[in-house]
Length: 213
Image 1 (cartoon, rainbow, N blue to C red):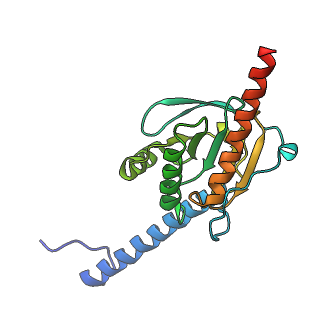
Image 2 (image 1 turned 45 degrees about the horizontal axis):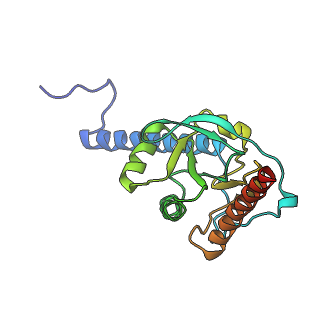
């Protein structure tokens, strides 16, 4: 039995097939545009530029900033994130950034180098759990990747754009607030982190001396 057609539709099957493909293409473009618009409302991307080394403010210029939240981790677990006890590095990030994979891999390598120190390093992402968990598994990341979909952490530690980095010192002050990609393996970045760790060591020495006296 020949396929039925609408009354008055004299187009050939091939023409109708082309018409259907065009309609499907338009729908797909509308959906993609909607997704991009949705993401643009959620986050702003920092201008693409060469990665910069991490910079640290002098202690006298560091503003107080606190975070105290419990967030889900990818691929599993819940992590209590709290500043003011040890140096804490937060890097707001997304896998779909232009250099998101390279940034995550470099930070993961840096975290391994500092794993015996008091420095806590975490990636923070607002994307859905399944996609982030798959990314973490594929890239075999060892550093903590936390999910802040509802924005609990962002409410305490603002993220004006992606990527964005905040480094807390031992006293719970913002030693670094820096937007844009970071050159995580640069000697200056390692020196900045080492400087904050040395401040912690000096503070501990002063406290022990005060107790002993």
